[in-house]
Length: 316
Image 1: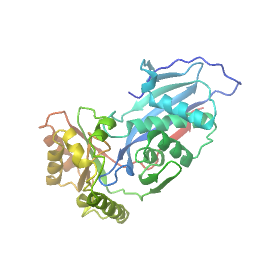
Image 2: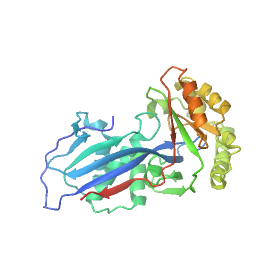
Image 3: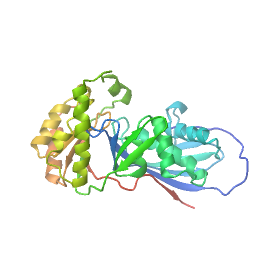
Image 4: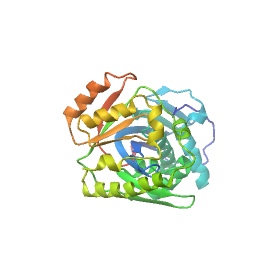
């Protein structure tokens, strides 16, 4: 769970003009086959919140109160994390979640969107002290890997690498002609569980497979040439071990290929499956029909890449 209502009394140190602002963060799809923990894309799912200065800290959704344990509220945790890192204290605030269509625990960046939103709450109260690079570094430090939070911040498709001191990233060019067909089952899969099935050691040949294909995959996105995309998305580091956690996943990939998809991959840690294709409503309807025959109440949506990234907009 991402959100909760928390009441904390604390005195405001100085009088100041009351702020009211909106934050909008896109959902993301990470890994993209061979880009394990380093390649991700922002999609047009959104977490949208309105924040106002308040007497107490409070989280609500569309005006209705929440009562969820504090340690499960990543937005609140990220706000606290940011204040500690910056050695700053912001006023109490009220968060109203007015939109959240990012499915939780489905491999579509729901946790990352909450982390980014929490950092941005603090940043706005500090008069936007942090630029996007600084926000990204804080988000990666908290999240642990960049493939979700960095595209959520910058938008588009992003390749990133990091260690304890460094964060490097590259924004790939716009890919307007490629659509993401998002197939979501009616069950959750935690990142912890999905990582627990991965081996501790890999064959050198498997590592070489991913490294060589990742370079070519990025090149194809630049060239907008997708003829060999299915081959280049052929991961050996995480997907073969995660298929067993997602019922009918390999069968679904075979069906999408038969119906004309360009390529497929497991989104993030799963269980969402992603098919890449052009704008093709016949493919969408065919997959709706095929998925309806399977258990787990699979749904499918056609999504575009979000190129705006996270935004903060003053309301007064």
